[in-house]
Length: 567
Image (cartoon, rainbow, N blue to C red; front, side, top):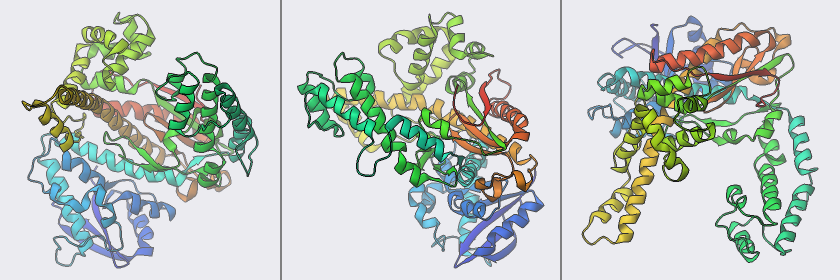
């Protein structure tokens, strides 16, 4: 589809929109006062066929959404810069590494009223637009001259779409029932108390201290608690639930219970509820590509750590419902497609992948299949995982070779890349210094041991980077395709609007939540079945977009209901 490219820049309270021609030369220029930007964007969007190029969706798009304006597509210069600057498929003649003002670490320098202090200003073009145009030209040149222009162009478009979606998710919010949340807290913790901890936490703490025989034991200081446990004869190295559960001691059960209650109280208790839920909406702050693999992060609200029990508080508005979908075994399926491992793809075809691995005779049980596959992807190649891994190598040699090769590259200090070309960070100076020290003639056994451990750690990172990063790319493709499909649904009338979802999303189906391989769509009841079908079709489309006709499916656990509880 052909569309116009419009570069957006702002200086001294005015915003300039410059339409580019095919050679990226300015064709026309339109300046508006900053408060009038939303109206100008809405008018151009209504004409269709436009892509906006701007510094940072997290800054520009949020204000547009607040004004009730949604855009179909954009190019996020800051996020794309981060991809291309380090991409192994890109050569060294693009100038991106010198354009440090576009690095994420320098984000503050491109988000003020005057966007830039420098730029190759063209005649008649404001400096802010000229700087954005110069960066856009660098980026398009880097992609076109790269070893994989198609893949990189797709990755950058998906990343930019993800940046829009992150802002839309915040604007629409997760429909949240404060009453249901408070009922859960009271049921789990007891009534809210202004002057102290809830009653059930106090009771759990007393049970721990009784089991320790130490009325003054400090339960919230890790070092002090460990000393109390050691004095009581429980010689653990940490207070993790997994390590505690391995021991038979009277303090184990009450301590695990106390930690669970305190986690709920501190992470999602009344204070969290007061801070993050307004007008029946939880609006977390998503950070697109906040993790080096391309996965999202959250800088506020803890959207990526919502406890299972709290999903009962995710409640659709009256007359609306939730379509919730998550992908079964996303990363192993992605691995099969990347490696073109038809045996693993056949094991996953139309069924639970781990059960398919058992049916092919690689291991004896589903639990073993899951343990072995996760070990292969995450680098747990010792212990039980290590014992099972040779069986996977015999049965699925292509898939295992891909992650094994990625690990070897990492252990040697090299970089790896995802399916579309996101490249892992290079080994740091401290890592290289450690390896150099171990190769010195005067190196000690401790130096060599540290170097080997560091190399293995980096190998585990690169082993997983290629799989997790490609899974993140698939998820972005899924989100972007679904976003387009949802935008085509007709609006409901004002009487049936979910007004708390805001001026853009209050009358039509919209994405409300995203977590790695799971989405939640808030939709009018009348559209529920059609939305569910759109979710399925977008998942299938994402698979074809990335992997072509390779026979791998991405089955969804899909549910329609008024809450986002998992079955």
